[in-house]
View 1 (spheres, rainbow, N blue to C red):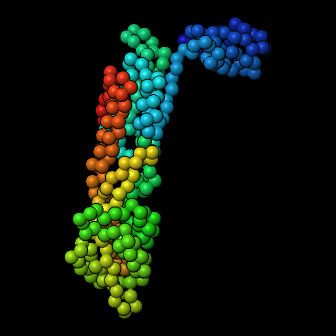
View 2 (cartoon, rainbow, N blue to C red):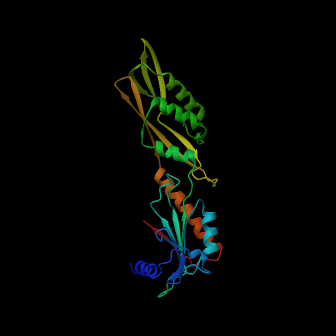
View 3 (tube, rainbow, N blue to C red):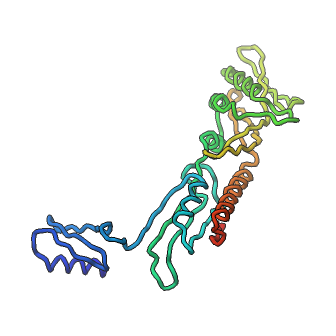
Length: 280
């Protein structure tokens, strides 16, 4: 309010219908005709009053490079323990960079945000987890993501080819009436149905495994167990729920890996004195 009042006084003291220059707190202002709107031209100063920036970075390497270039004695890194890795706008960590001291105003105020970019495949699996999905939408999803389905050595888990066969058979199950289900020795459920008086069945895998690469620009892959549940609606329609088992633990592991990369990167650059805090 005080600065606005001083600007108002400066304008009142100059009644010429031409632009004029005045300064306030060392910052130059130019007043121009047509109602005298005021423009801030801080960029004309040899040194601006302050250097404030918010920068979003996509990987730890860029994050560390920015800190190494602009870091000061008061730099600190804050890692968010609640990071969910479910979108490309989710902030994992932020570095606060300034040059303030006790009793002094900080000229530099940078905040660098680390927002790792999840891969499209990982986002789509995450969005599917826990949601209800129709049998046709499930078939389309499995067909699109078939390359991520794996069989761990020493298990009876379905292979990608077996899951593809299940999806193909499920696509053919349309105007039917479901009769009963039988648990098979191989971990599947055999769901029997009748279609125009003819009997048929489809074998539904209870569980299978996927291997996904969660983050763009990082080669690390992780394995997840997927549990497939189904419900029969009105004896004629299937609705599935896909559960990603261990997804919370996986995200915690990814967060821990990235945090360790930041800590080790700061040490390698000689910045052991930059604290890394874990925030909620």
